[in-house]
Image (spheres, helix red, strand yellow):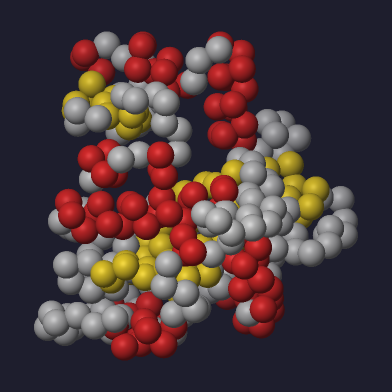
Length: 291
C-alpha cells in the first residue's frame, strides 16, 4: 500500500495506515467477524456505551448515551464569544493515534479508510443491559473521507468522491447482508449514516468524516419512512418525486433530483431523490449514481 505523491503537510501517512490495518476490504468480512473485532478490542470495550436506549415518551425518539464520549478528543475550541478550529498539526487522525482500520482504498492522493469508533454509541453487547431502557446492540464506525486533513466532499474530485461513496456502500451491504459467501451472523436491522461538522452540531474532530451506526435500534426517522410506505402504499421518495413541481427542483442530476420539499421546515432544507425508485440502499446504486 504505497503512493508516489509528495507528502502533504497534514495527513495520515500510508505507512502508519498500514500499521493500523486490521482488514483491507470490509466487503470480505462477515457481520459476525466485525462484532468479534469490536469485542476483542480492549480499548473499545473500556469505552463501551451503556447498552440500552431510552425513549422520549412524547414522540418515540430513541436516545443512546455513552458517558465516555465526554472524554473524546476535540479539534474545536468553543466559548460564548467564538468557535474555532485548532491547528491541524494537532489532529489525532493525521498523527495516526486512532483505532484499527477495517477498510482502506486509494484515492488520487492519499486514501479513504473506515475504522471503529472508539467512543461508540453502539457496541455488540452479548447480554441485555440492566435497567429500565431497552437493550441496544450494534456497531459504530467512522469513515475518514481522506487521509489528507484538508480534503472532504467539498473539494474532492468526482472520481475520488465516487470511490469514497462506493466504499461506504460496501460497508452498508456488509452490515445489512454479510459478506458474499460468508456466514452473515445476525446482520443489522438498520444502518444510519451521519455527516456533521463543527462544535455547533456536536462534531468533535475537524478531519472530514462520516459516522455509520448499525444495529437493532432503528431511528425514528427510518421507522416513520417505513410507516409512511405501509400507509400510502408508496415510498416517501416516490411521493416526493410526484409532489415536487419544477419550481422546487434545485438541480437535475440525470440520475437524481435535488429538491426543496413542499413542506420546507427551515432555510436550505433539501432532499436528494433517486429517480430509480427500485433502489433504496447505497449498495444498490450504480457507478453513475454514486459519482
